[in-house]
Image (cartoon, rainbow, N blue to C red; front, side, top):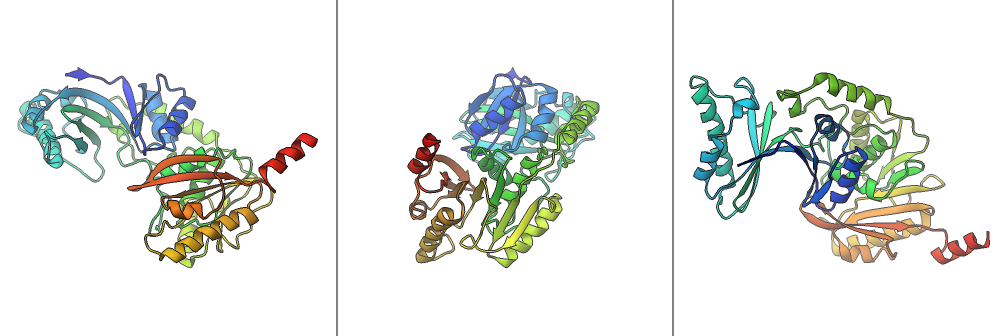
Length: 391
């Protein structure tokens, strides 16, 4: 059995690993390494707090504790009951177990997590006069993560608790809302410089423009969040955490350009306005009720990112027409903008009629998608270059 406590694992969506690695590097993380749907770096307590508060493309921040091999649930129990759980939390604290299991040895994943739960409880009973800590699956004081790949078992402490995409900004959501972590990832991949306008002309519940506003004023995405499991750890440094929060509050800046969200659906506009208000960004974000075909963005340079319907609830002719209209809108109204679109409708994307300057593979929910970025020059790219060379 190997004991770690020297690494941090930051989990994310497939396709966002490099973006997350760049974020960690900006936080001065050491020995940053990309793995599947996660990024690993060296552990230190300040970095752990900053990861939870500042990372925009991170879902969970884990600290691995133990790694061992196990070929059955009973074998797992035998290893786990020898672990000194009392070193990590007290009998008065509640706990829960999150799990990810891909193994022929553990065909019933929930049963494996139950065996780990039994081992933890039985260990406490043995040393605390038959008393055991309570299980709380809603908001536990301590959350453990059980990861099993084949016969390799890793048990980690989850410092985040609930997923970090839960910024607390949504009052309500539309039918197919984009996840906040993915929205932030798209904005970062677009390389928006925060010195120009930002538009989402199919804004749905407003997630993308809210993430853009947070980035625009340099506000840490989870600065307003109060629930983190690391606050219940035995090594929690409240003074250090408060100092970091104070520092992050002082880094918040003004934003001189426009952030606009628009949608042609009245209910979506209503939901977006409420979510923007809940996030505290009504002074930064303007919501309009208008279609992308009629949307006139602010003049000058900017970035547009949209998450249009993919076609699941539309007729084929409707979705084809929509993607043609999106392409026309890009060409006619968004000169000087970088235009981004995420979709899994590859036939529809061809109807936009533009060649993307960048292509990224991402996952939205369970759908394999692409994120295309188009640079909208005035005229052709060749003519633009000619004008520059003549000057």
